[in-house]
Every structure is written in C-alpha cells, then in structure tokens.
Length: 205
Image 1 (cartoon, rainbow, N blue to C red):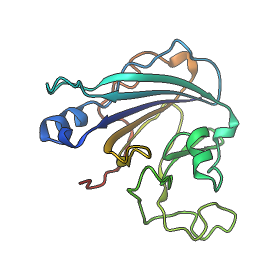
Image 2: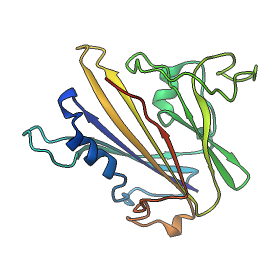
Image 3: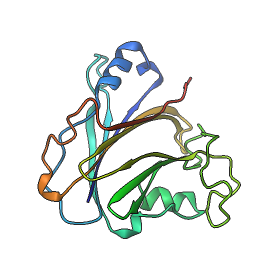
Image 4: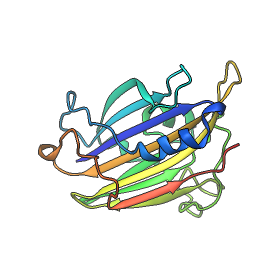
C-alpha cells in the first residue's frame, strides 16, 4: 500500500524573503493523520497551509485538511482534460503500480490558473497511446519505490486567482512511503533524508 502526505504552503509576494524561505525549506513533514486510514491502494493526506497575517515570521499553519482514499483508478496518466485530472488525481504527480513497486512520476498539469509551465523531458513523447504524445511538457519518473522505501518530491509554482487575477505562490511537498497499513504511525514521515528526493524548483519572480 502507498501512503502520501501532501503539504501545500501558499504565500504572497511579501512572504518570499529569506526568513520565510528558510521556514519553507525546513518544513518537510507534519504528523500523519491516521483517523480516516483504511485499506485501499493509495491513502493520501492533503494539508494546505498559510502564514500568519499578523506580520510575524513564523511557521505556516494548516487551514485545510482532507484525507483521500484511492483504488486502482489512481494508476493512470489521466485524460486529455486537465481539469478532470486535477479533480480526480493527485496534483502534478502520477502513480503507477508495477508488481510490488510503485513508479512515481512528476508532470505538468497545464491548467490556466498555473501559468508557470515546465517544458522539457517527456518520457511519453513518442508514445502514440499517451496523452503526452508529441507534447512539450515535463512528464518524467521521479523515483520507483519498493516496499518500505520513502521518497519525497519538492516543487514550487506561481498561481493566479481566476476571479481576482491576484498572483500568489505555492511551495509543495509530497512525502510518499510504501509499506503495510500495520506499519503506519503519526511520525512515519519524520525523516530529513528519505531514500529518494526529487526536486522541480523554478526561479519564480
């Protein structure tokens, strides 16, 4: 079984300073919520975080949490409809099960509210059956997890609110572990140096 913790810190232009950057770089994991855990193919905890609006430089605090249970339908690259993928799959990653291993891929979602596009390495560029066929968008393997291995994905984005047109930023971390449900605990992601680390960091202005 695969366990995923998704940490998503959203921040404003005035929170791009070195003080806030140090906080983001050190905020790699949080306690894993086991309250809604059950047997499935992939169990994911999503946390959305923001900084305190009082102006003090302090760690981001959660304002939203959701636990998601996925069946075998999660093992797909999605469809040609990016909004359908964004609502039904985990954002910016794809998961494939290969016997007793899990291949984790990073991909560009190509949604209008995220204008920071990633071009380049597309592993399915020449696959006529793929939704990424002949498309110049990143779609590459981050790592492959065997049982009891731990991988981390770190990426950032710039977003625009479709209603107000306000720009804001996102710092995102996926902590991913392959193990039995009996081995889960609140501090299962408390590791600064997992087996694999994949970074996709853009120079955002």
